[in-house]
Length: 328
Image 1 (cartoon, rainbow, N blue to C red):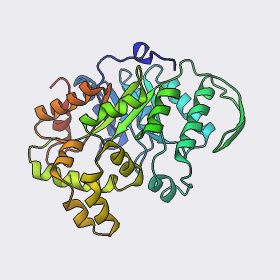
Image 2 (cartoon, helix red, strand yellow; image 1 turned 90 degrees about the vertical axis):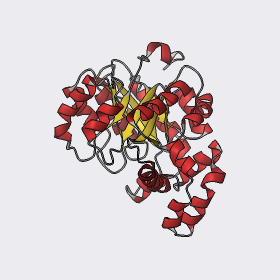
Image 3 (cartoon, helix red, strand yellow; image 1 turned 180 degrees about the vertical axis):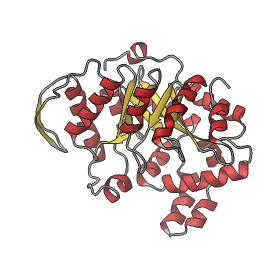
Image 4 (cartoon, rainbow, N blue to C red; image 1 turned 60 degrees about the vertical axis):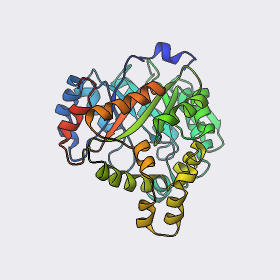
């Protein structure tokens, strides 16, 4: 998309939540989608890790609740061939015209290589090539080209896309963030504090969409919240992609003891040495009011679409969703 995307794209107040909800079957989500709309949520965002694929929950939401905005954060650029990926995006754009946002990302070695048997090679180049291919395919171009990381010969979508959906990149470091601003419509951020947002947005540049997945544990039991947070942090931030991200953010000194313990195979110590301050910066927790205040900090820092990943430990899911809603 051209510069000025924030002027033409629906950038009124957006407030999203991650689906599908744990413990709720896909068929049961129909009533939940209606409830989300009633509570003021504007967006539902899926992911592709080890649960559902990214597209199926959104296809259901598109059919069941036509007022919701839909997004994927993110689909790996390795796990679908370029042509199939373009077809999947075009299908969602047709099913939910003007309501779908696509998120592409390199993902990580565990997801791509260990779980899908695909060599995790040249992640930046693969993301760049996929983004360029998808942009051209959705524009209706017939593509016959050898990219650095794959070849496509004679592909053209047979069902034209009436309106190309915004394409965001899951981006964590300067190169990918700049690519998101230069060749995409914006970036999807993850695992950062509100104070880190400005550093990332500066690399993407102006007039671009910035979304972020925000982990929320709505409990006033700080010890319990930090216990859960430590397990999440050690699971994610020991992956090289996220470790390098936090070194760039300036958090290396705080997290080095965790990385050292993890490398030594001492998982228990790795959790224990994570400072409270890191838990509080990366995981939103506290009363519902305090959680909403922390979410607002991200918005004030430059996040256009907060996407809540709710962890309702000790509270009912429906209560948590209601307590965190913008209408609360």
